[in-house]
Amino acid sequence: MKKNTRANAVLVLSMVLNIGLIIYIFNIQQKASQYKIKAKSNELILAKYKGKVFTQKMMDFEMKRLSKDYNNKDYKKFILESWIKNNIYADKALKEGLIKDDYLKYWLDKQKIEMLASEYLNNRLKKEVKITEIEIKNEYTNNPFYKKRPERRKVRHILIRVPYNSTKEEIEKYRKKAKLIRDRILKGAEFSIMAESYSDDKFSRKKGGDLGFISKGMFSEEFDKAAFSLKENELSPIIATPVGFEIMRIEKIELSKRQSFESVKEDIKKNLEKKKREKIYKEIEKDVMGKNKKDYKIYDEKL
Figure 1 (cartoon, rainbow, N blue to C red):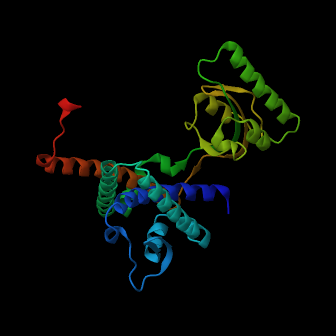
Figure 2: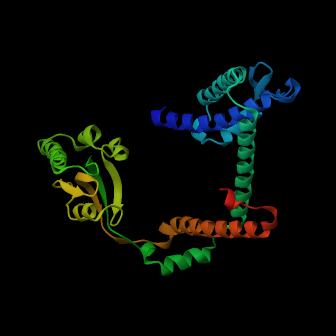
Figure 3: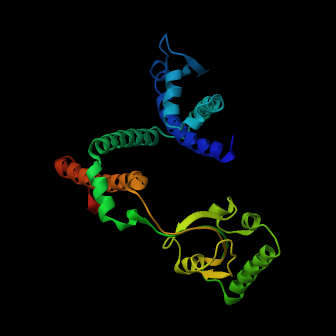
Protein backbone atom coordinates (compact mmCIF):
# COMPACT_ATOMS: atom_id res chain seq x y z
CA MET A 1 0.00 0.00 0.00
CA LYS A 2 1.09 3.53 -0.65
CA LYS A 3 2.31 5.48 2.37
CA ASN A 4 0.18 8.53 1.66
CA THR A 5 -2.96 6.40 1.35
CA ARG A 6 -2.34 4.91 4.78
CA ALA A 7 -1.55 8.34 6.21
CA ASN A 8 -4.86 9.71 4.92
CA ALA A 9 -6.70 6.76 6.40
CA VAL A 10 -5.02 7.25 9.76
CA LEU A 11 -6.04 10.92 9.76
CA VAL A 12 -9.67 10.17 8.92
CA LEU A 13 -9.87 7.31 11.37
CA SER A 14 -8.29 9.29 14.19
CA MET A 15 -10.94 12.01 13.76
CA VAL A 16 -13.72 9.42 13.87
CA LEU A 17 -12.24 7.59 16.84
CA ASN A 18 -11.65 10.79 18.80
CA ILE A 19 -15.37 11.54 18.65
CA GLY A 20 -16.04 7.99 19.78
CA LEU A 21 -13.59 8.46 22.64
CA ILE A 22 -15.40 11.56 23.90
CA ILE A 23 -18.73 9.75 23.79
CA TYR A 24 -17.28 6.72 25.52
CA ILE A 25 -15.64 8.67 28.34
CA PHE A 26 -18.89 10.44 29.10
CA ASN A 27 -21.00 7.30 29.01
CA ILE A 28 -18.61 5.15 31.00
CA GLN A 29 -19.32 7.15 34.10
CA GLN A 30 -22.90 5.97 34.10
CA LYS A 31 -23.98 2.70 35.67
CA ALA A 32 -22.50 -0.43 34.13
CA SER A 33 -25.83 -1.56 32.77
CA GLN A 34 -26.27 1.79 31.02
CA TYR A 35 -22.93 2.11 29.29
CA LYS A 36 -22.15 -1.44 28.23
CA ILE A 37 -22.88 -2.03 24.56
CA LYS A 38 -24.59 -5.35 24.13
CA ALA A 39 -24.73 -7.14 20.83
CA LYS A 40 -27.96 -8.67 19.62
CA SER A 41 -27.93 -12.44 19.58
CA ASN A 42 -27.52 -12.54 15.80
CA GLU A 43 -24.85 -9.81 15.59
CA LEU A 44 -21.27 -10.71 14.76
CA ILE A 45 -18.80 -9.54 17.44
CA LEU A 46 -15.43 -8.47 16.03
CA ALA A 47 -13.70 -7.36 19.24
CA LYS A 48 -14.36 -6.85 22.93
CA TYR A 49 -12.97 -4.82 25.81
CA LYS A 50 -14.20 -5.55 29.32
CA GLY A 51 -17.99 -5.21 29.14
CA LYS A 52 -18.04 -3.56 25.71
CA VAL A 53 -18.14 -5.14 22.27
CA PHE A 54 -17.40 -3.91 18.76
CA THR A 55 -19.87 -5.44 16.31
CA GLN A 56 -20.05 -5.85 12.56
CA LYS A 57 -22.71 -3.14 12.49
CA MET A 58 -20.30 -0.71 14.14
CA MET A 59 -17.64 -1.65 11.59
CA ASP A 60 -20.15 -0.94 8.82
CA PHE A 61 -20.65 2.55 10.29
CA GLU A 62 -16.87 3.11 10.20
CA MET A 63 -16.54 1.83 6.63
CA LYS A 64 -19.33 4.13 5.53
CA ARG A 65 -17.10 7.12 6.37
CA LEU A 66 -14.17 5.87 4.32
CA SER A 67 -13.53 5.25 0.64
CA LYS A 68 -13.52 1.72 -0.79
CA ASP A 69 -9.71 1.73 -0.70
CA TYR A 70 -9.84 1.20 3.06
CA ASN A 71 -12.37 -1.64 3.03
CA ASN A 72 -9.87 -4.41 3.72
CA LYS A 73 -8.70 -6.61 6.58
CA ASP A 74 -5.66 -4.47 7.49
CA TYR A 75 -7.65 -1.28 8.02
CA LYS A 76 -10.44 -3.08 9.82
CA LYS A 77 -7.88 -4.49 12.23
CA PHE A 78 -6.43 -0.99 12.62
CA ILE A 79 -9.89 0.31 13.57
CA LEU A 80 -10.38 -2.41 16.16
CA GLU A 81 -6.94 -1.89 17.70
CA SER A 82 -7.56 1.87 17.87
CA TRP A 83 -10.93 1.27 19.52
CA ILE A 84 -9.34 -0.96 22.17
CA LYS A 85 -6.47 1.47 22.82
CA ASN A 86 -8.82 4.43 23.12
CA ASN A 87 -10.98 2.53 25.61
CA ILE A 88 -7.91 1.76 27.71
CA TYR A 89 -6.80 5.41 27.54
CA ALA A 90 -10.32 6.51 28.49
CA ASP A 91 -10.31 4.29 31.57
CA LYS A 92 -6.97 5.72 32.65
CA ALA A 93 -8.16 9.31 32.07
CA LEU A 94 -11.23 8.70 34.21
CA LYS A 95 -9.21 6.99 36.93
CA GLU A 96 -6.85 9.98 37.08
CA GLY A 97 -9.73 12.49 37.02
CA LEU A 98 -8.36 14.29 33.96
CA ILE A 99 -11.69 15.37 32.44
CA LYS A 100 -14.77 16.85 34.13
CA ASP A 101 -18.37 15.82 33.43
CA ASP A 102 -19.55 19.26 32.28
CA TYR A 103 -16.73 19.50 29.71
CA LEU A 104 -17.56 16.06 28.32
CA LYS A 105 -21.27 16.79 28.19
CA TYR A 106 -20.66 20.04 26.29
CA TRP A 107 -18.61 18.29 23.59
CA LEU A 108 -20.97 15.34 23.38
CA ASP A 109 -23.95 17.67 22.90
CA LYS A 110 -22.01 19.77 20.41
CA GLN A 111 -21.09 16.74 18.28
CA LYS A 112 -24.67 15.50 18.32
CA ILE A 113 -26.09 18.89 17.31
CA GLU A 114 -23.54 19.37 14.52
CA MET A 115 -24.17 15.88 13.16
CA LEU A 116 -27.94 16.40 13.10
CA ALA A 117 -27.56 19.86 11.54
CA SER A 118 -25.27 18.46 8.86
CA GLU A 119 -27.74 15.67 8.05
CA TYR A 120 -30.61 18.17 7.80
CA LEU A 121 -28.69 20.50 5.49
CA ASN A 122 -27.37 17.70 3.30
CA ASN A 123 -30.87 16.27 2.96
CA ARG A 124 -32.35 19.68 2.02
CA LEU A 125 -29.59 20.40 -0.47
CA LYS A 126 -29.85 16.94 -2.04
CA LYS A 127 -33.56 17.50 -2.64
CA GLU A 128 -33.35 21.10 -3.85
CA VAL A 129 -30.13 21.20 -5.88
CA LYS A 130 -31.27 19.89 -9.25
CA ILE A 131 -29.72 20.91 -12.57
CA THR A 132 -31.68 20.39 -15.78
CA GLU A 133 -30.34 19.62 -19.24
CA ILE A 134 -31.69 22.99 -20.42
CA GLU A 135 -29.69 24.85 -17.76
CA ILE A 136 -26.52 23.02 -18.80
CA LYS A 137 -27.07 23.82 -22.50
CA ASN A 138 -27.81 27.48 -21.75
CA GLU A 139 -24.59 27.77 -19.74
CA TYR A 140 -22.63 26.22 -22.60
CA THR A 141 -24.23 28.62 -25.09
CA ASN A 142 -23.78 31.76 -22.99
CA ASN A 143 -20.37 31.12 -21.42
CA PRO A 144 -17.53 31.28 -23.98
CA PHE A 145 -15.16 29.67 -21.47
CA TYR A 146 -16.77 26.28 -22.07
CA LYS A 147 -16.84 26.53 -25.85
CA LYS A 148 -13.15 27.19 -26.23
CA ARG A 149 -10.54 25.83 -23.86
CA PRO A 150 -7.68 28.30 -23.38
CA GLU A 151 -4.10 27.35 -24.13
CA ARG A 152 -2.52 25.42 -21.32
CA ARG A 153 0.97 24.24 -20.52
CA LYS A 154 2.37 21.38 -18.47
CA VAL A 155 4.93 22.95 -16.14
CA ARG A 156 7.61 21.59 -13.86
CA HIS A 157 9.21 24.12 -11.51
CA ILE A 158 11.65 24.69 -8.67
CA LEU A 159 10.93 27.42 -6.12
CA ILE A 160 13.58 29.02 -3.94
CA ARG A 161 11.44 30.89 -1.46
CA VAL A 162 12.59 34.33 -0.25
CA PRO A 163 11.24 35.15 3.24
CA TYR A 164 9.36 38.40 3.70
CA ASN A 165 11.54 41.34 4.84
CA SER A 166 14.77 39.68 3.64
CA THR A 167 17.72 42.06 3.26
CA LYS A 168 19.38 42.73 -0.10
CA GLU A 169 22.25 40.48 0.93
CA GLU A 170 19.86 37.65 1.85
CA ILE A 171 17.92 38.04 -1.41
CA GLU A 172 21.17 37.80 -3.36
CA LYS A 173 22.06 34.64 -1.44
CA TYR A 174 18.76 33.01 -2.51
CA ARG A 175 19.28 34.14 -6.12
CA LYS A 176 22.74 32.54 -6.15
CA LYS A 177 21.25 29.32 -4.80
CA ALA A 178 18.74 29.31 -7.68
CA LYS A 179 21.56 29.95 -10.16
CA LEU A 180 23.60 27.02 -8.83
CA ILE A 181 20.60 24.72 -9.23
CA ARG A 182 19.93 25.96 -12.78
CA ASP A 183 23.60 25.53 -13.70
CA ARG A 184 23.50 21.93 -12.52
CA ILE A 185 20.43 21.26 -14.65
CA LEU A 186 22.17 22.79 -17.68
CA LYS A 187 25.09 20.42 -17.04
CA GLY A 188 22.79 17.40 -17.13
CA ALA A 189 21.22 17.05 -13.68
CA GLU A 190 17.66 15.68 -13.78
CA PHE A 191 15.14 18.52 -13.25
CA SER A 192 12.76 16.36 -11.20
CA ILE A 193 15.52 15.17 -8.87
CA MET A 194 16.73 18.74 -8.33
CA ALA A 195 13.14 19.78 -7.56
CA GLU A 196 12.71 16.97 -5.03
CA SER A 197 15.99 17.94 -3.36
CA TYR A 198 15.85 21.75 -3.36
CA SER A 199 12.40 23.17 -4.17
CA ASP A 200 10.60 25.04 -1.38
CA ASP A 201 7.20 24.22 -2.88
CA LYS A 202 6.36 21.31 -0.60
CA PHE A 203 3.36 20.23 -2.68
CA SER A 204 4.97 19.92 -6.11
CA ARG A 205 8.36 18.93 -4.69
CA LYS A 206 7.08 15.44 -3.93
CA LYS A 207 6.21 15.09 -7.62
CA GLY A 208 9.53 16.36 -8.90
CA GLY A 209 8.19 19.91 -9.28
CA ASP A 210 5.27 18.86 -11.48
CA LEU A 211 2.45 21.45 -11.44
CA GLY A 212 0.43 19.69 -14.11
CA PHE A 213 -1.32 21.76 -16.79
CA ILE A 214 -1.78 25.45 -16.04
CA SER A 215 -3.71 28.23 -17.78
CA LYS A 216 -3.07 31.96 -17.70
CA GLY A 217 -4.19 33.61 -14.49
CA MET A 218 -3.55 30.67 -12.19
CA PHE A 219 -0.23 32.07 -10.92
CA SER A 220 1.45 35.46 -10.61
CA GLU A 221 1.91 37.78 -13.58
CA GLU A 222 5.68 37.13 -13.56
CA PHE A 223 5.14 33.36 -13.52
CA ASP A 224 2.59 33.50 -16.35
CA LYS A 225 4.78 35.73 -18.50
CA ALA A 226 7.65 33.25 -18.29
CA ALA A 227 5.58 30.08 -18.59
CA PHE A 228 3.73 31.25 -21.70
CA SER A 229 6.80 32.59 -23.49
CA LEU A 230 8.91 29.41 -23.31
CA LYS A 231 9.04 26.70 -25.95
CA GLU A 232 8.38 23.04 -25.24
CA ASN A 233 11.22 21.45 -23.19
CA GLU A 234 12.92 24.85 -22.81
CA LEU A 235 14.51 25.72 -19.46
CA SER A 236 13.64 29.17 -18.15
CA PRO A 237 16.08 31.75 -16.82
CA ILE A 238 15.82 32.55 -13.10
CA ILE A 239 12.47 34.29 -12.61
CA ALA A 240 11.81 36.69 -9.72
CA THR A 241 8.22 36.31 -8.48
CA PRO A 242 6.41 37.65 -5.38
CA VAL A 243 7.33 34.49 -3.45
CA GLY A 244 10.95 34.03 -4.49
CA PHE A 245 13.02 32.77 -7.41
CA GLU A 246 11.63 30.25 -9.88
CA ILE A 247 13.15 27.91 -12.43
CA MET A 248 10.73 26.16 -14.77
CA ARG A 249 10.57 23.84 -17.71
CA ILE A 250 7.65 23.48 -20.11
CA GLU A 251 7.01 19.80 -20.76
CA LYS A 252 4.00 20.05 -23.05
CA ILE A 253 1.95 22.75 -24.78
CA GLU A 254 -1.72 22.28 -25.63
CA LEU A 255 -3.06 25.05 -27.84
CA SER A 256 -6.49 26.59 -27.40
CA LYS A 257 -9.20 24.43 -28.94
CA ARG A 258 -12.95 24.27 -29.35
CA GLN A 259 -14.74 21.97 -26.92
CA SER A 260 -17.90 20.03 -27.75
CA PHE A 261 -20.93 20.19 -25.48
CA GLU A 262 -20.59 16.52 -24.51
CA SER A 263 -16.93 16.93 -23.52
CA VAL A 264 -17.70 19.68 -20.98
CA LYS A 265 -21.23 18.72 -19.96
CA GLU A 266 -20.23 17.16 -16.61
CA ASP A 267 -17.94 20.08 -15.73
CA ILE A 268 -20.75 22.54 -16.41
CA LYS A 269 -23.16 20.49 -14.30
CA LYS A 270 -20.73 20.39 -11.35
CA ASN A 271 -20.13 24.15 -11.51
CA LEU A 272 -23.85 24.90 -11.71
CA GLU A 273 -24.53 22.55 -8.78
CA LYS A 274 -21.87 24.30 -6.73
CA LYS A 275 -23.36 27.74 -7.43
CA LYS A 276 -26.91 26.57 -6.74
CA ARG A 277 -25.81 24.81 -3.55
CA GLU A 278 -24.24 28.01 -2.23
CA LYS A 279 -27.35 30.03 -3.16
CA ILE A 280 -29.80 27.58 -1.58
CA TYR A 281 -27.64 27.23 1.53
CA LYS A 282 -27.90 30.99 2.12
CA GLU A 283 -31.66 30.85 1.53
CA ILE A 284 -32.07 27.99 4.02
CA GLU A 285 -29.97 29.84 6.59
CA LYS A 286 -32.03 33.02 6.19
CA ASP A 287 -35.29 31.06 6.28
CA VAL A 288 -34.62 29.06 9.46
CA MET A 289 -33.16 32.02 11.34
CA GLY A 290 -36.14 34.17 10.39
CA LYS A 291 -38.87 31.65 11.17
CA ASN A 292 -37.34 30.65 14.50
CA LYS A 293 -36.46 34.13 15.76
CA LYS A 294 -38.76 33.80 18.78
CA ASP A 295 -36.80 30.73 19.93
CA TYR A 296 -33.35 32.27 20.26
CA LYS A 297 -31.52 35.34 21.57
CA ILE A 298 -27.89 36.46 21.61
CA TYR A 299 -26.90 38.68 24.53
CA ASP A 300 -24.46 41.00 22.75
CA GLU A 301 -23.94 43.16 25.83
CA LYS A 302 -22.45 40.19 27.69
CA LEU A 303 -19.84 39.38 25.07
